[in-house]
Length: 225
Image (cartoon, rainbow, N blue to C red; front, side, top):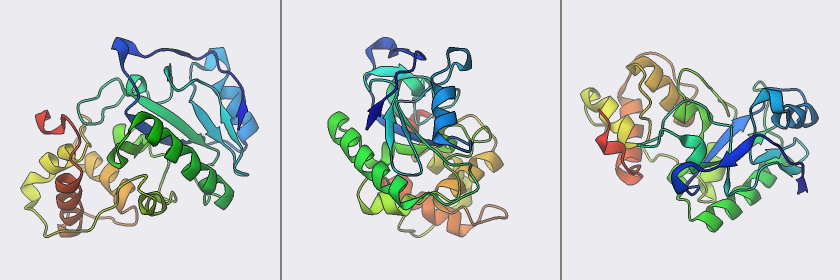
């Protein structure tokens, strides 16, 4: 781990503490260029951590501070995701596999974060989960199942599917509560759990959501329309 301070941060609003982890990819060709941007005052973006393809971890913002990585979006009842999350950027263009050394480092880093802040696996999410239609990272190549095997994320065990008419209610209960249309919401759910799936909402989608929504309901999500 190395330290490279970014000026792009501030206090968490309202005395909030981190209770989420949000994963991103940089969409840049190198960790060096990504680090420069995340630390440039004029860019007005940052993250707590950046992990290079070689597994090198750079911390840019202290965990108790509010980094500027999530932007507009929502997860469960949380609208100011930056104040409630720790952001991790993975050096990746978005069109390539994630390197083994990088994934090893990510597992180690996330394990420490969730232990320090008592963050449940269901609150380790992708940028695409809380900003559907606006963001797609960490993208379809990211190995969520690997994190789930370590208890660092969730993965479905498809259940008997609920009726399609309760799609939005189950998606909200699972945390996908951003105010977007059903098609965009479905794309976000699939990007997280079934990125290979296309076409209209079907029973396999409902089987996934039925399981996730009932085993890992997100706090406050039931209050969403």
